[in-house]
Image (cartoon, rainbow, N blue to C red; front, side):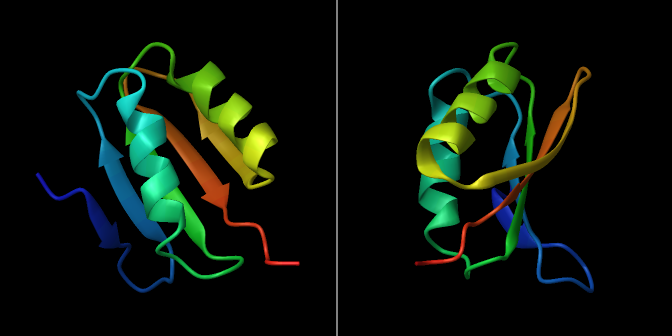
Length: 85
């Protein structure tokens, strides 16, 4: 399973957190967000039922921007790394 890959033709990075349970999706997001540039987008797919609440709380706590969230069997979050001050 590929965990992190650039989306074709974009600077977005995709992180596969499907089948991971809390707190691992947030741990992986925290690691991945450090590897991308300011204002770059991390797209995360997860199946953990707690992911929606967890990713919203994480974005609020870290100052990163949760641009979009799609709920479903596979949840999809689009997170923009905040620019360094």
